[in-house]
Image 1 (cartoon, rainbow, N blue to C red):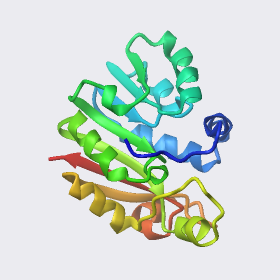
Image 2: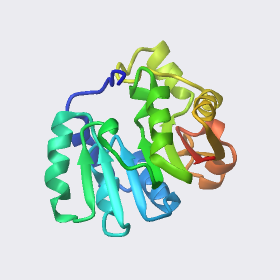
Image 3: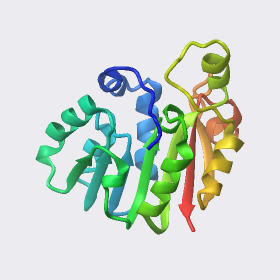
Image 4: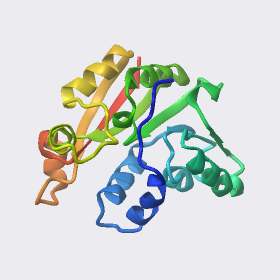
Length: 207
């Protein structure tokens, strides 16, 4: 598995972000929840377990994957109350391959070779299954690659670069939208003109 680059204890910061309804993370999570359909979910890069906690009581099966050892330990404790939920330390330990939907929320940009992970995810989904990805938009090139302000993002693509990576793994792109337009809070524009949004949401299908 390729190396994952991340800030120590980053998952603790997520919890406070989700509690603020005006934050990018909270808005993103609300949109993702509405996109998820089906009875079996695989969430790769579960972090603080926000998505798992929200959907565990609404789906037949929820499986999380988290490679950060501290975050993994915290998730094990958090999911004890959910009988239909499990957590693994790596994607290759997930033996099932019939999930209805898989999510990687703000994960792929932290992986040095995300194509390998995307190909693994393709194999875990059932035919016609949905893959939902959130990644930074092109602003990340400036903030991280040029200004060097974020050492934890190691893979950069435009919208079309990410789409190409997904298509090469076998996925068919269904929709692309953005979240949180800069200076404007306009969901219509975020859907129609994803080029300007702060974060991208790509929904694709396994052929």
